[in-house]
Length: 487
Image (cartoon, rainbow, N blue to C red; front, side, top):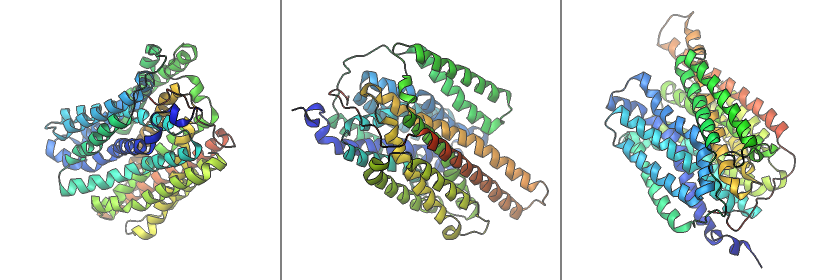
């Protein structure tokens, strides 16, 4: 009798593997925010300008967002274990380089390398999870834990970055990655098996070039719009290039014998809805992390550590909701009632944040919103991660997983550019007809934040409507299991 134990060499050690995957996922997610806290100290130490400061963030986002599909396909073709371990070690080396940087150029280079290796690591981690847990009950628990980690990683990064920056030095916000990466790589080398794919089709080079350059132009376009405006010639040119290249990419994938992104992965309504949900969440969550961080530190005078602690109720809400959804609810309802409801709750939470004032209080003006947003994100992330990989053939699980991260990354780029532009415009408009002064400046800043929260709430409302239309009623398709699934 063929059982899961005889089919999959990872079966008996699956929970240990989940621990390793969770560590890797936490490292990738928290790295997107932990450096934000360290930026002022790094700028003072290395002496780079305010105009160059954004490149510390952009240098990570560009390769990460543009290379994810390629990274996912590499893990499918050459083995998930190899991609996972290479991604971990490369990420660790790039982080060490950044921590040792004595110039702006070296720090930017290190961040770009982090993004490139993260694009290899992230889809390999999720695809390993997808093919290792095939039993519906255990799969729900595993994805619940994974979704919780993905949801809280950004806030954990803020807290950890604040502690390291205040207690030690900004460089430890980069060095700390080694504490995650090296043990995870050592454990992964022992726990994971390399199972070569029985078929290794050639890499789709035309698809790789058009997808990578198209996504690069798209992410860079949003980053450039943030600093130079939406009507800037380069911004518009980048968007045109992105649309043309991604359109060509889709046409190539429809005709390619061995496509980089098989259309069967994305045309499924549940997977398409999951990808859209992750993109919408990426747009909306920016307003929570960034502008609420500004409000707490610059308006309420919270320290970096206090700011990180202030986000903990949201973390706890995400964790508890994600685990509850994936272990008790999702298998009975499917994602359709959960994801739109989560987006609705997140919209209400952001709408409540518009009540903030210059002399407002955390317990009255912020805490209720964080709890609601946390519950909402838990309802979105947990079923979206599982829905994005449910029913996918093992040979496509890497690229399907990459689409989850790509959607979230593109959403984050949109949110960064759109909300920052709106905040700057609203803040400057507020002070135009008023007498300048510290009080007016503080009121203008709060006004700008509330505009961001209203727009974020509107984005979640639109996301709730679209995902409700896209997602099919009923439970998710059973995952495919194969003898060489986990490689």
